[in-house]
Length: 281
Image (tube, rainbow, N blue to C red):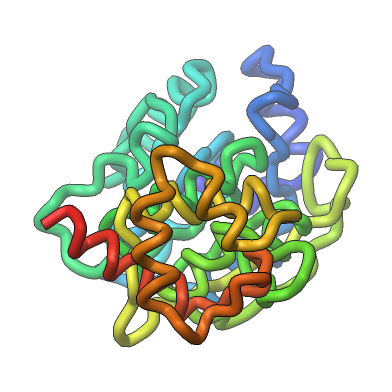
């Protein structure tokens, strides 16, 4: 099997048959079979020699091989033991650093702490895209992310305030990244063919990215879990969060008390983060 990242549909099917492997729907295993999309993912992330790249769910290694060909150092995490063994053998003579683990436990695939700027390029398993991105946005931030996502997830990640798709992850992404590119990708570019289209989403880190504190993120998630209620009612509804939210509302005269969470702008959530940090000092 070639390791140049150019697996055709028939080669993908043959490889799965040889491994006696059936794609697991619960793991979101939809393998990329379009070489043009593989190239575009890498080009949009501007991956080249000397780069450090994290890949989540490398699967059969289609994207992995293309990344390695750029001269980048690749750190990948694969949960499936059979695919992990396949990748270890396929790339045994390369510089790939491969981890057999859950990406939610190792969102950066054990990228060494001494690595500076890095990038993420991945055909993300759809089942974990939101919690995985949330974890990434809680730690070391990559310079760019080139992510293949289910269309609905991509729309939620970059949704505008006041829309039905606006959610906690929208808030977190908007304060750390700008959208550099967004391309619709047909379901026909994958095997097995998913029921929905995908989006190749490219995010570029802001010059001054903002990362919310863990407790602030918990409060924001709580607020959105009651998104049909007004923020004043939400603030009073939680025994755990009521005191800190009361301080927030007292300090934020510009925030209308009848706003629902999706109408609250990022500047207000950032003030909440400041209140949280002051309260924990």
